[in-house]
Image (cartoon, rainbow, N blue to C red; front, side, top):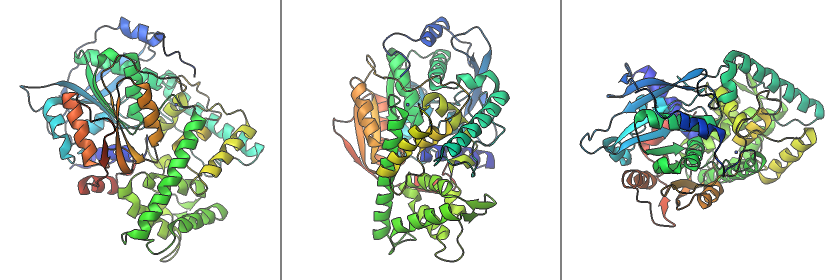
Length: 516
């Protein structure tokens, strides 16, 4: 594997591993729908070999779409695309579009440069029968990008302000950082919301010449898919939503749900440590160690060589959260906690902070898209203090980080108006949709999948009875059901469950640099 391909694979698998929702009407067509309809055809896509480091046979291309879908004749932006043509050229089904999550995940890289499908033999039928299509959503990766020249994180600015002055400091920081993004990105920054991405997907369907598409969306990709199914139910052939995001939930509700799920994940991690000698904290109280590390980081900080300074508790909680989302990474979490606690020498938080979201290049898209889709309606310091107190009450150990609190705190003072706030979502008239969720997912809580399944007519929920974010990474059984459904359209039986199972190959891909 070339270094370019290795980097792309790590980014893709990491975004899947991470991590990663009442203003729009849902019955009447949106303005964007009307303008989509006016773009009835698109120029044929000019596919070419992706070049060095790509998966054999991978083809890449670009296509133009309107910057602003309410002005289809106006300025254009480009989307980066990739394709792996079906191996069975005599019996092709059509196009299967893949989004690996985020916001910020590269679908183009996932298809053209990642080994994800090769390391999951259950997905072999997909490679045989489908043209696998990846794309980088607007603002992401090789598509017309978001640019943010100023850091979106400052260790001196708390995401849990304890005073009105600290709250105003957070607002000022976010406003300044966001304004720098606006100046560097230009008008695109107003149009990187998921509703605009859905319009791009419809344009891509037309450009591919498909009457209907199949969709495999993970984590944030489930938000894109569910909104597409709501707006274009007659254009869906099959759709898998794995690691479900329910964009109809108010952000403050989603933050509480995620905090509860993260707290549960920590407890299950501690249970694993008690029973498995692989855990570097085996024979100790893992939760007490976690709390001790957070207390030390809060009071005096813990050195982290990759930061060149001491890390604080919020930063370490961010990294710990990322490890918690995948049980295959729990040995790494245990080792990182042991090192940060100084159990075998001087305390060193490098391993614990390494996967933190703010260190990743995708974070600028993650923040910008999130502030469009999940902008909080925080009404000042007192309101934010009430919300943070609620987090502490439901997650007394892990309250310092969850993705929806990242948006709650990061979008306060953000200068770009939200274009796609959480809104009611129902899907009528689509074929059966398959939703998949692990029961103890910290990033996308199981209850979100239950809620969304009830809003999609004829849908089926497949439950993976175990830990980790997404079924695709945590259950061979789930991968098998997903592949069978995508090929045949046949859903699993009602109430079907899958056992969790850790593939050594998948686990290696995640833990050898794949986290975020």
